[in-house]
Image 1 (cartoon, rainbow, N blue to C red):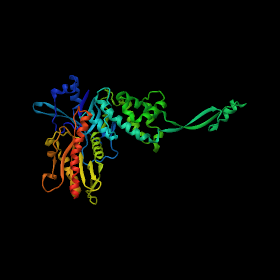
Image 2: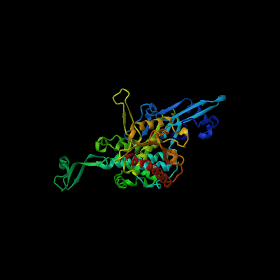
Image 3: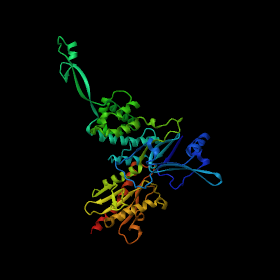
Image 4: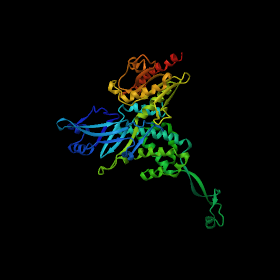
Length: 471
C-alpha cells in the first residue's frame, strides 16, 4: 500500500480525506480501506525530529552544523482521523519539511519535494557547485523513488569526491613472491626445502600496501548502479576514479555482508580515510534500497526509511545563488546572533542568510522558507513574520532590507511585494520584502534559470540601497 504526499502538506487541515474517498485516494480495495482505518489511522501517529521512532530511519542533512530554536517543532509526519457530523470521519495527513520514503505498519509513504525534478536538480547542483544546465541527467524510469535516489546520488558523489582527495583506503598485506630478486625477507625454511642446490630463485616475504577490496567493490558497484539509472553523466566528475575502481574491482557482487565489512573496516578509522564512512553509508542505500522495505508479515516493526532536510537544501541553494551573483557582498548562512548573554534567559538566533557589504558594512537579512507561497495572507506564518522582524531589530542602523524568501507559485510585482519601510509605516528607512524564485512542477531548466535571474534583479535593487545609506 502506497501513500504519496508533498512536503509541508495540509498544515491548516485544508485537504482532509473523506471516509468514502479512502479507496480512491489510496487506490486500494475494501480490505485495503479496512487496513487504513484500523491500523494506519486508528490513533494519532506523529513523527518529529528526535523522536524514538526515528532510530530506524536514516536522516540526511546537507549542512554539517544545523541550528534549531529550542522550542522549534520539526514535524516530519502526522496521521490521524477526526469525527465529523453524522458520525462521518475525516482522515488527515500532515507533513513537515523532510522529504523521503517511510515504511509504517505495512504502508509505504513517499514524501515528495512537490516542485518537480528540475528544481530539485538545480538545488543539488548548487550544493555541489555545479552551475550549468545538466538536464540531460534523467532517470530512465519516471518513479518517485528515483527522485530520492537522485538526492542520495549527489550526496554520495559529493562526499566521495572530497574523501578521495587523499586516495582510496589502503592497508598493508603480507605477500610472498618467488623470483630472482630479493624483496623483503628471505623465507629460509622454503630455501632449505627447495633451493639446495641453489637454482637462481628465492622465496621472499614482504608487506605491501593494497586497496581494501570490499571498499573498492562497494564503491564501484554503487557508481555502476547510478549509471544504470541516470546515465554516465551522473558521475562525469569522477571519471578517473571510476576507471581506477573498474581496474581494481574483484568481479564479485557486493552482498549485505560485503557492505558491512566495508563499513566497519579498520582502515576508515584512520583520519586520512574517515570521510569514507559517510560515502559507504550512501553506497549502502544505493545498493541495498530493498533492505529498507519491511516484511509485510511483520507490520508491528518500527518505522523505517530515509529522509532529507529539504528546507536545509533550499537554504544552501539560496545562499550559493546570492553569493555567486553578489561578489561585493559577504553571503553567510546560519549566522549566530547572541542575545542577553549575561542573563539566565540568554539565547542565540540564527537567521538563514545575512548579506553584508564588503565596504559599507550594510546588512540585508533574509530567512529562507520552503513553504507554499500563493501570495495569500495565510501563506505567511505568524512565527516566521515575527522571527524576521527580530533579526531586523538586532541589526538596527546597519540594516537596509530584510524579508522572507519562498519558492513562489506565481510571478510577483516587486513594487507590491517590496515594501518601502519596515512595518509598513514611515518611521523606518528599511525595506521589507516577500520574494523568491518562481517554480512550478513541469518547468524546464531554461525557465527556472530565467526566473532565478528575475529574482536576482529584484534583490539587486535592494542591494543598491547601500549606496544611498552610505552618503
